Amino acid sequence: MADCLEIKQHPSPNFGVRRDGAKPELIVIHYTAMATTQAAIDWLCNPQAEVSAHYVISPHGEMTQLVDEEMRAWHAGAGEWRGCKDVNSRSIGIELSNCGDHPFAAAQMSALERLLNDIMLRWNIGPKGVIGHSDVAPGRKIDPGARFDWQRLEMLGLAEKRGTDAVPQDVEMSRFREIAKRHGYSGDVADETLLAAVRLRFRPWAEGELVSEDFRPIWRSAVST
Image 1: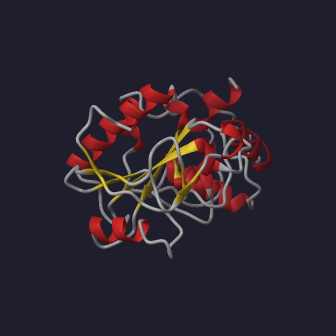
Image 2: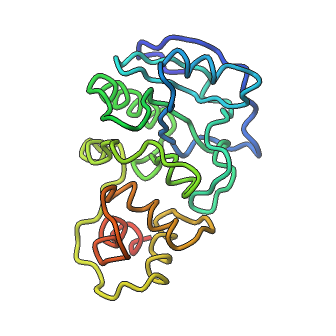
């Protein structure tokens, strides 16, 4: 429960107990892909939907909590990160009211930053633990999308900073897969799906075949793992 922030409460019935005694070690950022914030909240609280999240943030920066952080919300679905396949049991899900086709509002980003800082302190989650839904489920999900400002979070220490060092010039896909897996992309997906997921996070407007620049953002953390 985030006591120091102004957060509305709208309890969702769609949750369960975290499995195997797991605690939150990840924060997964989503976008709602719905016309309004209220429509998203209504859907995430609909028992027939069988989906939920811990928090929803409106474009105006209003924060609504749907599921207690101690509980397992149903936001990540099938996916994997760093070998963990039950991401829901080890994460807190934050939904941003946005359809992915326009930038995220300044008030919404400011609210997200405050909420992230609060959650990270409470659960001792470092910047490496803040990821996108597209990172967990490459090929299946694309949120928070190409217009989400990851570099803004990185500058504030609220997401892992991308690498800027020199990278290898041999751009073999097998090596890229190895580096991406060390970074966290451990799911078994096709080469093109993996490349698209890494680019969506770090080089969202890049196209074409694998190049050395695709290694750069994940190189530092991967080789130091």
